[in-house]
Image (cartoon, rainbow, N blue to C red):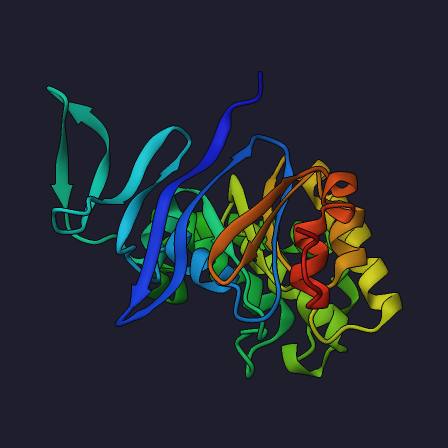
Length: 280
C-alpha cells in the first residue's frame, strides 16, 4: 500500500466574512499525480497557500509524510507544530515559514512565473541547491566551502540536462520562451530535492503545443525524480492527461473526487464548469 504523503483534514480558510476554503479534506499518496480543479474563485490557490505555509488555516490540519505540519482547533488558537509527539501532546512551535516547509520536502511553483529575472538559467537553479547545503548562501558566494559549491554546480548542470535546458544555461532567464521559463521554474523547485511538488496552474498562458509538451515533461520528471505531485489547473485536457485522481472545488467546497473518467461524467462538475442547473 502506498504511503500517504499529504493529508488535508477539515481545512477551512476564512478571510473576514468570506470563506475561501470550506472544510476541505483530501489525500495524496506516494507516486501519484493528483489534481485540484474548479472554476475561478473556487479556492484552489488558497488551499495551496495553506499547504505551502503561506496561510495558517482558520481550522483544520495538514500532515506531511504522516506527521502533522500545521493544525488549528475551532476552540483554540492556531498552532504550528514539530514533527512527532511526546506523551500524546504536540509540542508547540513558532510558525513554520515557506522556506522551512521547503526543507521538509515540499516545493511549489506559482501561476505567475517567479524567476530571478537578472540571473542566468544556471544561477536560477544553483541558488535553489543551497537549500540543502550545509554552508549558507553567503559562504558559498565567497567559496568558503569549495567542495560543496562544486557539488552544487555539478548538480545544477545535471538538472538542466535532465530538463532539456543545458543549451540555455548561460542565457538570462527571462529571455527564454514562455514554455522554457516554466520548465526552468520547475527545475529550480526540483533542485530543493522535494518529495512533494506543488504546481500552481503550470499550463497557464501556454499554447496547445506547449501544453502537450508540459504534460509529457511532468510525467517524465515524476518518473525520473520519484516524485509525488499535486497540481491545480484550469486546463481540463491537461488535467485529464496527467492525473491519477482529481478533487473538484466549487465556492470553497469539495463537490467531487475520483478518477479522470469519473470526474468527466460527474453532473456536479459539469454544472460547476458550465453553469447549468443540476437535474432535481
